[in-house]
Image 1 (cartoon, rainbow, N blue to C red):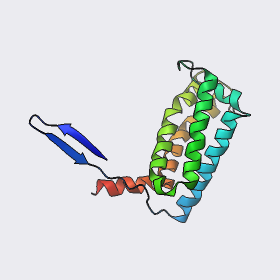
Image 2: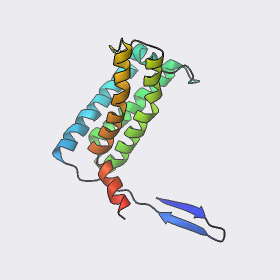
Image 3: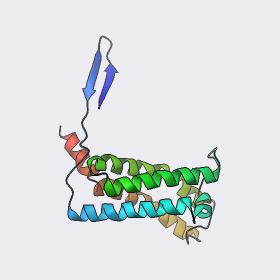
Image 4: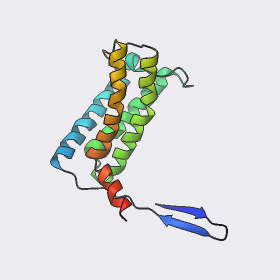
Length: 158
């Protein structure tokens, strides 16, 4: 990937490199498979039997139908889950995309907490608050299990 920045006199092109595949350990592989499987299962829930519960998490300020948001996020979750499970050559990029996805859906978790919405067995403010602290764990899980953390470190040494 390249990026062009313009100096006062001439354009400067910067080359950045991010490896798409990084060798991972058995533990990383196992945790990537578990996370990918969870994502596929969550996607199935979004698209079928848990749609109403997921709709309860969509913040009211999103200018789209709650059902549409749930369906679209289910499709994205399915694609990311399948990518985590099978797309070896782009594993690092899938991990980064999944980490970004977890960040993007965080407002739904905040909305569930601030509006005291019961869903998924989270029926107390304490349970909903604890869940908020699990989101960074999911981001790190996605990045670490795919080798993205190692790829970022390798990139910074180039």
